[in-house]
Amino acid sequence: MKLFVSILSVILLQACQPKVALDELILWVNSAKVQCTGVGKMTCLQIQKNVELDLTKDWEFFYSNIEGFEFQPGYFYKLKVKTEKIENPPADDSSIKYTLVKVLEKKKDLRYTIHDVYVLTNINSKNVSSENVEQTPTLEINISKMEILGTNGCNNFGGSISKLEGDKIEFGQLRETLRMCEFMEIPSLYSKELGNVRSFKKEQGALVFYNSENKNILSFKKVD
Image (cartoon, rainbow, N blue to C red; front, side, top):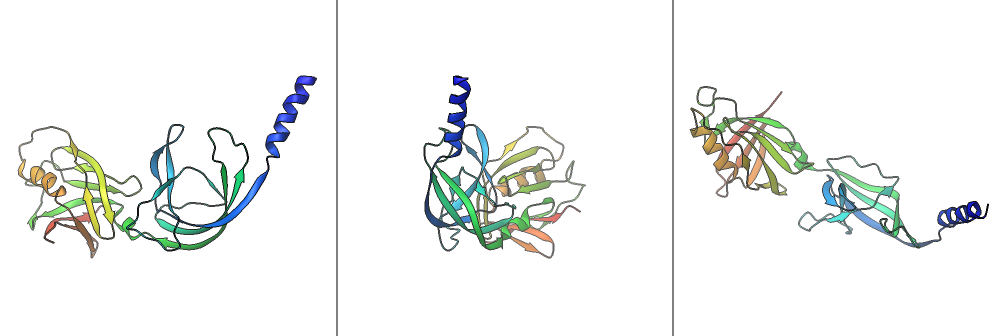
């Protein structure tokens, strides 16, 4: 009986932990969750503690939840949140509770306009057809994971999106399989030019990549 009363007392004490009200806070939430490391591997929101959104600034990992907030990828959110300090929180929990007060703004992230699967149509103004590759070169862009993958017409590849700011984009070093094919000119050139990409445009349903000299080096069409 004494043991039961002791356990019940601990539960009631935890449930009634005092919460000291702090200030309300303005947060910007990034348009995609990213992988982060907490107790284990997980995905986290990213935030800026600014009144105005600044895409030139770094984002902070946000390991907590915001009670009442429903996140939808592809949008920037400006939030007003209430913060409360939790006295003596569990070791693996945040000492602050965040509760949504109001969504002040919700802006579509235009970078998500390129989140799709494409086939390569031109490389350095040269048409890419089934006659000069063994399989159609493709590119899948995943903004949520900041990754790309596809085939260069011979080998499969994957890699990271190392930079994406406005219309500026760059890819990290590609990982490729090592097959040798009868036709290697287009596959080799495609992989090389992906490393030279510096910006992009969406033009009449096409995705076009440009190098540092603003030269059209790769053109794609969306897979239906």
